[in-house]
Length: 484
Image (tube, rainbow, N blue to C red; front, side, top):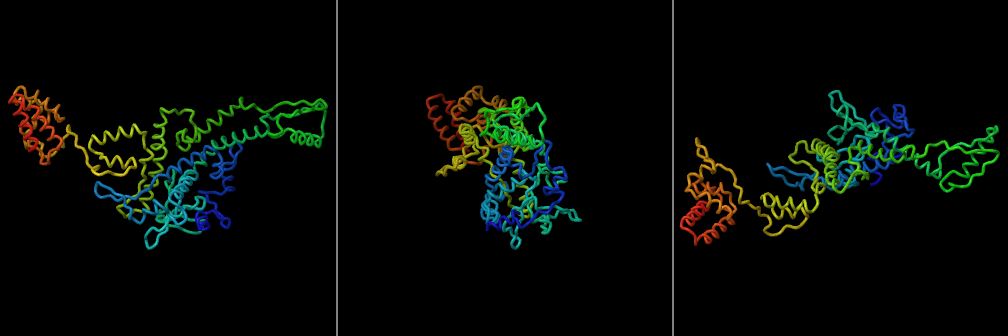
C-alpha cells in the first residue's frame, strides 16, 4: 500500500522525472539561472524547507487548509443542507484514496502549491463516478495545449491525462495555466537568509572567533604554509577547540580579517529575512513566529487578517477547482467550514449570541450548536421583538392613498391620546407609532398576535381598572385591535 502511494506521488528510485522548461531538473535549472544565488547558496523547492521561516510559512498554510472541514452541501432554494449521502462527501471529507486521509491529502497538495506554485491530483473514475483522488509530484507533470486550446497533462512525459481528470490548483501565473514557483522568484531573498544562517553556524563552529591571517617575517615554502595551516586549524578550529592559547614562533603575528557580527548587522539581517519571507507568502509575521510587532491588543485582528488576506484565496482556489472538475453537472458543491477559525473570544461570542437571540434570528439550539453543545427541548423557538413588525401587504395604505404619518394620526385622536399611547408603549414594549396605527383602525395582520404582548395587555387592563373611564376605554380599544 505504501509503495503504491509513493509510486503514484512520484517518490521512487526506479523512475526519473523528465526535465521540461516548466519544471526543469537541477542541472537544467542551473543553466536557466536557478543555480547558486548571489549570496552563494543554491535554492530549490526542496532545500528551501531547510530555512526555518519557509518551513513555518508552508506549514501554516498547508496545515490550515488541511485542518478545516471540507463539507459537501446541497442547495434547496435559499436553504442548504449537508449532503452526507453524496458519493463525494466521504472522498473529500474523510479519505480521497485508500492510502491517505483527507487531512494528509490536502496538506500535501497545499504544500506543493506553496513551493512549486502548482498542485496536481489525478481523478480516478469508476463508471463515470469519482472513486479516488491521487496526488502527483509537480516535478513529474508537464502541461501542454492541444490544437483546440484545451490543456493536456503529461506525467513523466509518457502518460497523458485529460484536463477533466486532473485537479490542478495553480497559483499566480502569466498564462493562466501553469503557476509560478514562489521559491524560484524568491530565490535571492531565500539565498540571503540561508547564507546568513550558514555564516552564523560557521562563526559559532569556529568558537565565535573571526577568521584572520598569520603573518611571518620570513619567506615560507608552499609545503611549510600548508603544514602551518593544518596545524593551526587542528589546534584552534571548532567550538570545542575555541579559546585555546596560541603559541606563535619565529616572530609570527595574528591579524583578524573577518567583520564582527555586530558590525555586519547579522542579527538584524536574520530578523529582516523573516519579515521578507512572510511577505513572499503573504503571511502576518506573527504566524511564522515573529512577534516583534505583535501585542495582545492586536493579535486578534491579525488573526482575522490571516484568514482574509492569506488563507481565503487558497480556500477559494480549492473550492472553485473542485466545483469545476467534480461537481460540473451537479447541484451539490463543496465548501470549507471556517467558523472555528473565526471563533472569537468568549465575551465577544456571547455578546453576538445575545444580539442574535434578541433580534430573533438565533434560537437557543442554534447557539448551543455553535458552542458544540447538545440541543434542549423547546430550544428551537425564535423570539419576535415587540418593537418590530413585518411590513406586508396588509399594512400598506389603499391604492391611490398615502398612509398617514404618525404625527397626522396623533392629531386625529383626542388631545391626550399621544400621552396615553406613550404610557401604553412603556408598559407593553410596543412602539408608539404602532399603537397609534392600531388605535386609528388600521387592519391588523392575519397572524396570531404574540402571546407575551397579549399577556402584557391583560396586565395593563388590571392596572388601569382603577383609573379613569377614558383610560380603560383606550386600553380596551388597543386590546381589541391587537387581538384582531
